[in-house]
Image (tube, rainbow over the protein chains, first blue to last red):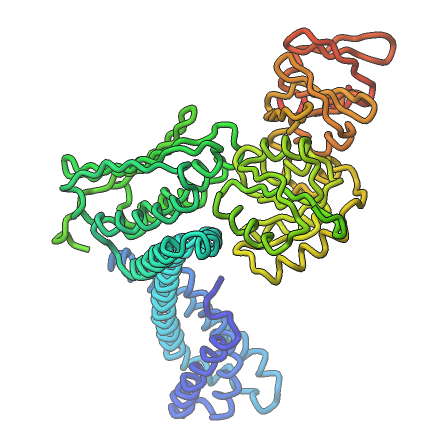
Length: 355
Length: 253
């Protein structure tokens, strides 16, 4: 689509022609060979048509962008087009003069025009080149605006994924169920109720705080998970067992915040919660050869129908890893019989690594 | 026990101990309600209903293996049920299966009392057949992934992929799976509506077959045919059934 064919831009384009027309009228009129009326009568319709013709400059401009086209090609393209169009413009002027000569006050216009034709040719040539440069300006403006829009869009998308990920961390059902447990404990075991309140408060505070950071030490993520699992242990009692196998050196490595939490929550919601007798969750970390391996394993009921729907948390983690590490990170999901395993592999980043 | 006040027997079903504690405590101020049993899962609940014949059930939705809706489908709807759950998205479904009320966790005293009053009013009321209600309550565009069948107090889960065929028998359907037949109180049309139509075909007024099991089709008599299943079972195919079967098999090619 031609960029000038919007109402406001086309108006500005036509306005820009008015002073040009005025100058041309002055040049032709002041030479003394043509009358003022003749000059104006001819040039207004002539320039009106030529303004429309010069819009075609957009196509050579588009096909020969300044950055990628060599100077000879650039010059030959536009000069040739300018010459062709100027010839056309001369013919147009002659035709118009012929039509105008029918009116008695313009009877001599053809005669008067003839010596002016070289000037007119030069004018047509210059006008076209002017239009070409104008289109180049519009073209680069358009391109930069598009690039800006594209960048905004990717930024918004990445941000959105991030926000969605963070929002998903605090699952409302987790909150409601925890509050229900607290409500039960208040009469049976007030001390435990208080402990649970504090665990929940810590968990919420950490979750909200982590959302603002780009990366955190693995140790911080693990301490958040400790809170989360402690709360779930109150809910599920003996049905939930947790095993941790954390390599000490890996604790200081940097990970995106809340990268394990959705996986552990899935392990509880889609694994343990579907097993009448409960099951275990195993968390492990290992730093090796410049990479950090994080694993979440859990038992699950292969007959349960909800295991298939645990997509969202996993999708979000995958997207966030892709956004941050590109092909440097991978995520492996493995469901075997009654055992579900997610393994993340990321570059081992230490504190002084660029963020 | 004084007989001046009518006694109600109640069942509490929730897989979380603490969630049952809350209901028990809320009931403690109601001497007219006797807690007959507490169940930690759906299987226990089905058994306890048969054993204790409760007047009222407090039922969690999200439980392992059998959900609250499965339990309701199995026990029939003669017993008033109050759903207790942290998930509000099941509320519409709960009222579709004629639940008395729907309590959200954490449960408050006031809301609980209101639900209890409603339940007392509903005791002894007859309600429509549970299986049909459960079918009606199924989320649209979502087909069953497994069937629940009760034989006495024994509950069997049949993943639909393991269902070979279903045969209408009066008010029941016989579900054939892995060489066994299970009777379920449901009409064949009701069952057909719950199954994925790209995997199960109604080949006859009385038969639905799992497309995966059909080995070949043989002509039989003038207008009808026989479907021979992988295990050798022969099922009648009506003219209309054959048209349905054929169009589905053509689609799969």
